[in-house]
Length: 256
Image (tube, rainbow, N blue to C red; front, side, top):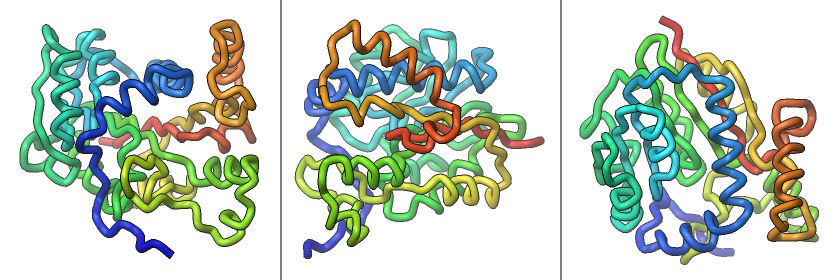
């Protein structure tokens, strides 16, 4: 058996793969569309300063900057950060080459609004990361947190026929080469418990891509995507569907 990674996973040298293999395809486009709608429907947005931790190619920072938020962007991978700089030319954005652990040094809070999307599942200790985020969140502030869902990973492996892998509970990735199976897929109950222990309140949970990733057609046409988006939006917060979202999005509030 391969040894599992013992350090956090950063994506140095993978900006092109993310741009062309993920965001140019339906899964990436749908993820962004569903995520922005989840945020708009559950988090008050009034142009408050925002820090985007692990911002990747800068799509969500670009969306927020377009809504008038002054954005501080953190991304540890050099080529990802360069792509984000290009995407955000002309916007009110500060850039730092840093990971979540460096937030308290390069851009300490308290922040009234924080984004942390698809980051925790690439960390060795995601529970500690939740507490780091909580420490930087202002009273009455909001955190938009999205994580890779272990239950969805389990279900998709069964659908694909990887039965022994599921029976052996060998779901986590090894963090090798350009594979994109997270090293720390997360369970909903754990995430909620960690947030509560950090003094935060979960105000809404949304499944992101609750149907798309189980379709037989890997790259649906535009007409199918339009209907699929309607279905995703309709069921993304309904039991039991949200629990099988490829990602789970949490709208998190810090009481004063």
